Image (cartoon, rainbow, N blue to C red; front, side, top):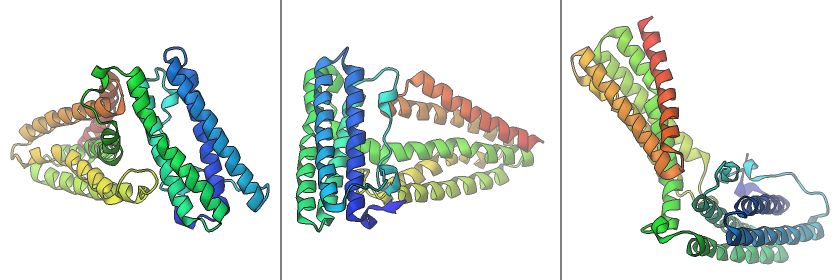
Length: 318
C-alpha cells in the first residue's frame, strides 16, 4: 500500500480516473434503485453520474496527452488514507437519508483528493484541471441540502446537522464502536476462563485488567495507524485511536471490575449482568448510528458474545 505523497503524477491521474469511474457507477446505481419511489432524486443522481463520466473523460484525455495510452493499475484500496466505501447501494431497502449521507461523504472525499493532488502537481495543465475538479466537487456539497428540501420531511431532519453528524460518526462513533465490540466480546473468554479455572476473584481481576488494557492499546494503535484521515475527512488519527482504545478498555473493564468483590459467585453474577448491558448498548449504538435494525443488531451481538462466553467457561472448567 502506497502513501498518497509517494504517488507519481501518472499514478495520481490514474487514481483520479479510477475514482471517477467508480463514483459514476455508484451514482448510477443510486439512481436506478431510487427511481421508482424518488424520481426527482434519481434524476439528480443521473446528472451526477453523467458529470463524473465527463470528469473521467477529461482526465483520460489529459493523461493520453501527457503520458500515452498505457494506464497504470491503481485504485483507492492501494493508497493509504482512502476510506473504504460502505456498499449501501447493495442494501435490500435503500433509505434516502443513507444515500444522502453517502453522497455527501463521497463528494467531501473527492474534493479533498483533488485539492491535495492539484497542490502537488508540477505540470501547469494537470494542476489547472485538478484544481477545477476540486472546485466542482466541493460545490456538490449542496446536494445533501437539495435532497433534504425535496424529499425528507421536517420531522426526519429536525434538529440534525448532517455535516456534524457525519463527522461524528466517521471520527468518533465508528472507531469507538469497533473498540467497544472488541473489548466487550473478545475479553469474555480469557476473563471467564480465568474465573472458572481459578475460582479466585483477585486472579480473575488481574487477568481481566491485563486483557482490557492490552486490547485497548492494541486497538488504539491499529486504528490510529490504519488511516491518516487526510483524504477521508475522518479526522486526526490520534483522536480516532484514542476513541477506539478507550472504548476497547472500557468494554473489557466493565465485566472485570466486579471481580473486586471478594465473593466469587456474587462477582460472577454481577459481571454477567454487566455483559448483558454492554451487549444491549452495542446493539443500540449500531441501531442509532449505523442504520442496523435493533432486533437484528441485538441478536447478532448476543449470539457472538454468548459463543465467546461459553468458550471461556468451557475452557476454564475443563
